[in-house]
Length: 422
Image 1 (tube, rainbow, N blue to C red):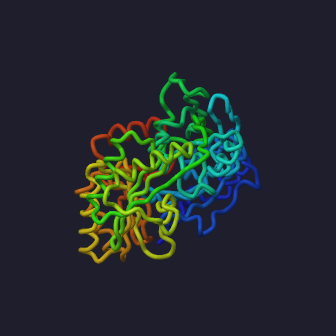
Image 2 (cartoon, rainbow, N blue to C red):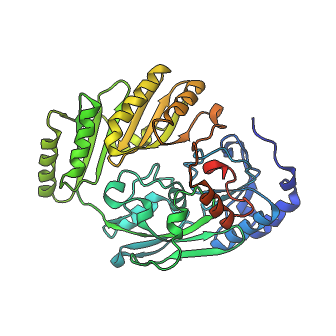
């Protein structure tokens, strides 16, 4: 059931004040489909520039209005159910690529630029941002930073925290804070880019970011090997990581009713890729090389449910524990008659999908949190909106809470969404 609107923020007088800040066309009533984990906001604002966004955020903070920052809206289901959601603050109109310094391998873009839009521009100079996040046609710069969504290229290019070298964020008190710079070796000042990456928009609203770039590969080659046992697949992953191969992707795909499959991707010249492919085939040993039915690098996106009830979680384990983790998931799923699929990167970072009714899904997730130290629920059925998606916050909670209070003392931004209900 959707919580009732807060009468203290529902008056036309208050919203008329915001309308004067962002303009008549940029403020509208939130429709039913704008619900966030069952909580429906009152209004949606789309500022056209940073100054309007800062002013709108300051107004909301002073009025005691809870703000939900949004980019493309592809990951609004991630995080805990918001304690309140009065105003959705969209960066959709902040959609300019500010500067592409192609000779320095850097780019500066506003938060509302989509990943596909950015990559298309960079490709004109033979460059790319070394990420392949979910739903790139809709996902935005601000959104992927807030959720720390790097994709499979993380293995070769590093995580988003390694690629972002500068950010500008709007703070609830009306400050427009800058950190980092436009050069790769800039280390001056507080490392704000790393702090806001993965913070789920709880510290400030990202308005622009600067990234370091990589040359765009002209050719790629992918191989897929099927194993009879999950342990064999795990051994191949470890051997590949210890080898001298320069692969740009290495992942395990495993499901309850199929053999585990390992995908490995190479980039470079034809001769170089052939040599590395020969090395990979040698390491694969008895594993069978196959042609997957669908492109394997889209497997992660295929985990997300359409209409059927399912739960998707992000897990993190040691690479040496991948096989044992899959065995644990298999046993838990069998006890509850649930189906499951997983895509796990060579680094031990993986995504798990469980298919079952709501009660078994909750039971499996709770049961897996003990053997898997790091399990975060990303997507779940409406009946499970109230569960804690993060699990125990650990010893770092007091520090995280102190940082939250420093940046957002009134709890204006995404209240309740982050670890421990921050």
